[in-house]
Image (cartoon, rainbow, N blue to C red):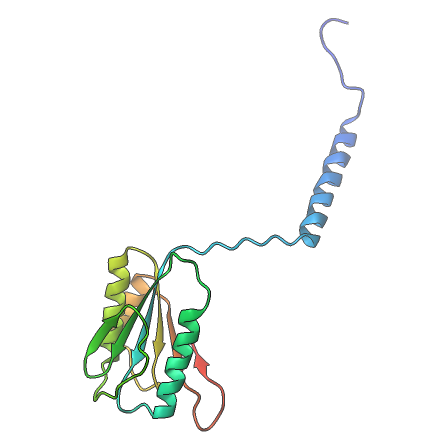
Length: 168
């Protein structure tokens, strides 16, 4: 023979071997749980309605639920801000202990402020909006939320008719 060597195993053997390996990896993937949890840094803004239309009971519910979310374990890279809105909009670095009644309410100004906070942070952002459910989002604000890919979660206290809170 001149310099050409041949393999003594037929090609079907290699095909069968690779099919076997593939099947083993598929079965392993089904039985082994892989958990990858990646939480990127982002800005979380709590918008809290402070208008006179919200009952004392609902004010307590709003603060209690905002506190639960605020205190929930999070990645330390998450920046949290609070926007309180009633007759005026206030930006806070932490949740207030109580909500003082204010006349009027401008939900759209609060959302504009939250979007501005997120944009200034140069991080992705999320907005959690606490209200009694009596507001309308202007088209311009809705377009900004979509354009900047900012999810808006609306948290409404349970009504007297049912015991279910609406979370969108």
